[in-house]
Length: 378
Image (cartoon, rainbow, N blue to C red; front, side, top):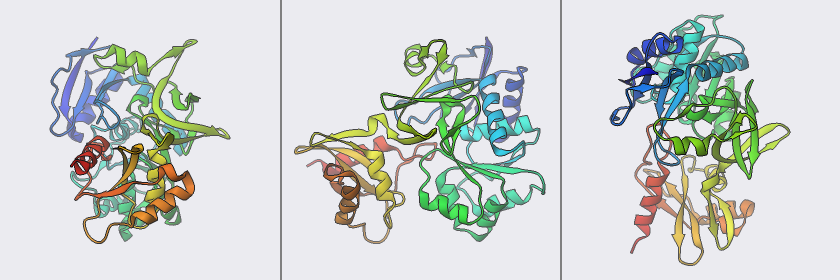
């Protein structure tokens, strides 16, 4: 066993402790998000565990994911191989989030501390200044969420900074095609990543598994295997056993995502549990949302399920426009119905002042579903 210490998720506090944890010379570390506590956290973990990450609970109850040094280093090595070698990393994500923590891990293995953006909302100017600190010909990388990429593209300095980078990992949520295409046109090398805290971050890049990663589809669910898998959910053996089945000596992670493999490339279509039954037909909320977000003024719209006395459940669009008119419901219904059928057409649009977000930056879908239910109550 080894000690586990909980620290504020600040670069200066986490980086040296994580470095010692990866080398085996120090305790394991749990970075705490603002407002989070270490209540119920054990004082010790398995000797091979270096990092514990508390997830945001975007698709269920929050979990404490225990990751070994071997898993984190295997992930860092695979990323380095996919991008073309070690380089200097720009830290633009919180270090209580696996994507931010992996920027630290990759920086540690590369032997160069990351260049961190100031705390607070993403600032394209500060991002550009950080990128300029990396002298050519040193390779420069960063990891962003789609909203940050869009913000950088909207700023002239940000666009130039994106073009200077040798790799931009984008994950955490779906990257709209329009944003990706604009980034490519600006000269940015964008890599769409897929993975989770349980896989030490992204382990499938642009649909292709990284070195050592296996992907399979079982009953429509994406399952992953490889050296990057987490050890356990801390203090929750039943959940660990359900999520990490072992078959013929191979340990798999059940992602809960729906997908398919076409010509060796993984295509993720949404969550297994985001399928509702409307009038006896299955409807994928993720597919509905993808179509809605392609329409003008709807790039940040979220689609959730709502109960219906007539149909059982129906899709509802949550729109967070602060000014201007809401998109026309009939236009949304027509666009979705043409591609997915009548059962998938949104029932209504619910306007909110702002989308509630989880600490990861993802929409809090459970809060939005509750808000829709409240809005529908008599």
